[in-house]
Length: 176
Image 1 (cartoon, one colour):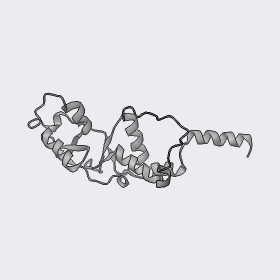
Image 2: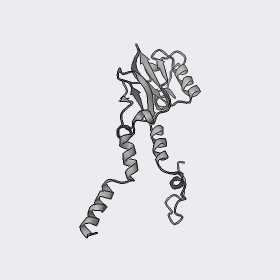
Image 3: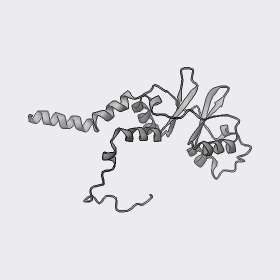
Image 4: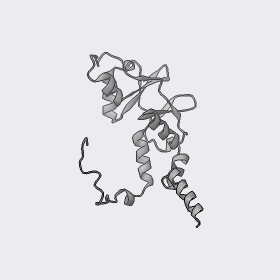
């Protein structure tokens, strides 16, 4: 191989990190293949207490808020921390619509993993509702779903390789 070919390959490798299998999986896998549970929905008049209790009971990080059979918002664990905890709210009488994120960004279930991952990283989303052709929610894709999917691409062997003991980057576990 000539020096020019080696330089071209090195530039290509720098611009396209990761195995081709990963790139293929990201662009060819649709979100409906990654999500395993249907959307958890509540009405806009559901109280904060009931919405939070439902999230706990179902072990979900969010609920979708419906109003007149349309998606009105999303209420996530982040909303509980940032909009509910420490606020002078009556959880038993306050509707979830007061603390939801209204008009959330949505994707069709046939959008690819790469697009969703890019949107989540750039916009800071942890959850994106998936909707059908009529705009009705069918599921929610989470960052956790995507990370679990990506980790399945790599074999268990690769994931369990111990770190190189000569690297001393992680001596302390501050913040862990």
